[in-house]
Image (cartoon, rainbow, N blue to C red; front, side, top):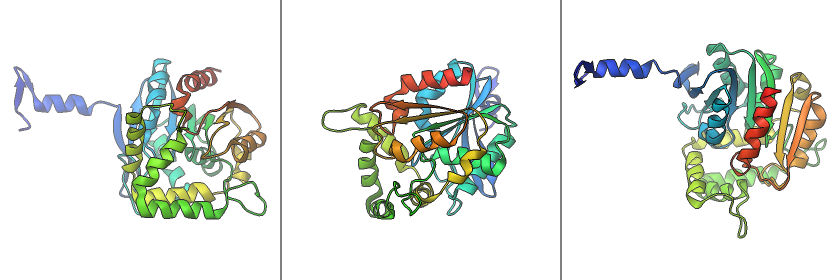
Length: 297
């Protein structure tokens, strides 16, 4: 089969060789028996896009196209347990997830990088500075981020009660797909009078979430809800863009980005009036413009 002729002078072997030379989509082994699916498009300064929970790299569809057209190299990957990446049983704490990110940067030999973290992905951005000293990174972007600390505690009284996270976990265990269906509507701000995306597109995003490992879905929910990044924000010394919707029901702006903007010294904070959590789609044109303006600055 390997040497079958598909056209005069061309064999499958020749065809496979051409395909395998492509640099656009690959697997990178970041730990023993853990391979992450990575898309790598375009030329120019590298921008790494880190997806939110419980999505995959496909959430960045509208940003990837725009950034490549504006002469940036775009790397988007699936976090372990999600999308097409390996689904190990353990390793869903932020130290391990950030070590995965570090391996991608190291193995692709990236320099002058901009890290872009959406929602849960903001945790990897911050932890990369505190744990890996921000090696190779010169700019950071936090979009709808869970930073700095979501859990309600004595010294974080505005946070979310632990019981809310426990209820979410119970719902995922009982009917994960049903939970995702309802979660998506809140995520994009869908209600009786507001339908910012089509039903088929909403179902598509739900299906992206459904592909994730149930174990990873639960473990990452625990990590994003309970990890405290407050004492790490001072390690971010690079220009940082912070974007958040004022109508975000998943991660309210008051307990997240408003606090982050006060803690990171060199930042630009933009609040999108009336925008929901999933503004990478609902506000995609404005987000793309703000991203490129920041990257070019």
